[in-house]
Image (cartoon, rainbow, N blue to C red):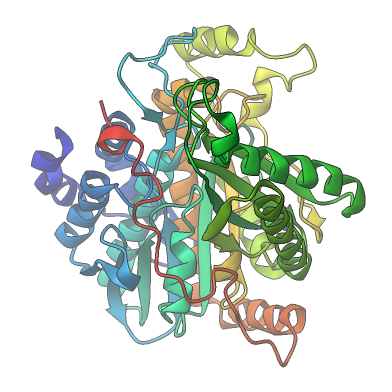
Length: 487
């Protein structure tokens, strides 16, 4: 890859001469990130090109690890049973501040860097959630903090967690379960988005599984009575789950896709598989709903005289908000500011924006910081950051790496993330993370308030129990994506 041969250039660009105290320390961090912005941007775009899916992000992970090793971090690879997972640390003693980094792509969607729909032939995945920016931006922040720690002799440890397979693979859950966050005082993260926001929000807990039905094949016309259709089992299960929707809480979400339903209409299929997600703001409600879904699968197997087995793929908690930490992130994001477009970027944004509904947010909102809010109950999507937030105080932000109005998991997100628009938002996120880490290192009263709120929200007798149980990381859950989602 182009970037790997440039790792020495990254280190050569780190000489910054601004003072090191107070706001001037943040000026130094910002100058460091700006001086290296082209290199970090190229790294992100190389990962965009790779588009490696969950647990198969070998080149992407190594690219991030290489940058961190070159900057003097100690890197532990293959952590928590995940070949592409890693933990990189610099410094010593406390406080220990963690930054999360993702780098997996989504299967089933791809797009060129064009502002018009332009799938790339033969490519099986794309960075429709911006994780190429997430990983590279977090590395930029961690190395900027390292530069400041080294220059000042400030005690403390900056630690970057390379977390694979966020998209349905729950990589962070296995890191939490392995105890890799036990000595961390606070964790920061960010995500690609269509606006600039650092509110204290929650998300939906989520549990998923693949339900596999096994029947008896036969000629569908010549001897159908000899067959037992595995697809009938899947369809019967789906019918019962769809009736169940009337009797779950309005805040619940259940969705599925049939991943295997047979190959020919004239053959009674002896194997079929359906992949389910079950979501709710409350993890205990998710556990209960999932058990009901399992019962529908068991009933479907009985009724169709097939055999059923299921494999839990992932299970994740809702985010536990931390207002004190989120307000610190918001203050730093407000200092950094939004994304300003060049004339060329504005033309690109207008073409993308023209594909959205009329009520989409205006392009100008990319320059704005959204008001701070506290959202106690989650809605929308899910993230394995949720599990981290229940074992260590956690807060994050979004920056406008996409054109305002863009939905995640869309071709428009892939396209913008492959341009300087995406990189500009990434650089803003890196600065915000670095500034907030500085605050946590230098303001003991802030860290104390963050931890006090964390203990109050979580409760005094809390014990973490992962929704995935004791299963090992599902390293092959994306195996059907040929080549790991690359070209």
